[in-house]
Image (cartoon, rainbow, N blue to C red; front, top):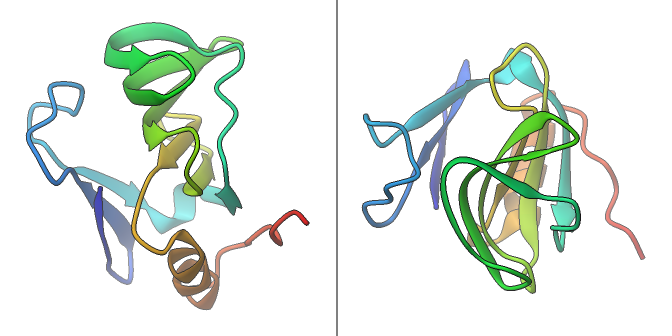
Length: 121
């Protein structure tokens, strides 16, 4: 997943064509909708398919899913550290993204004024 940061939003663009992405193949997340940023290995337990998406359970998830009736967007291998964004006032409640250097992205978002949860020991 490729990310770009503007003063108003975080833009997500897949490296390859992904059927699970919206038709325009990019997703803009207003920074005002990001409630919390964290990094680490994601927990796919209790994750259910909701809409367009694909998964190799316990290994890779891509697309729209839900957990406890809250929609989430995943593009991640569960054994890799990922950038995880908790959202509010947005159609997705959470984004789980496998990106290069998730800790560096968390720092960039912290510098943009967003709350970042310290990494777990």
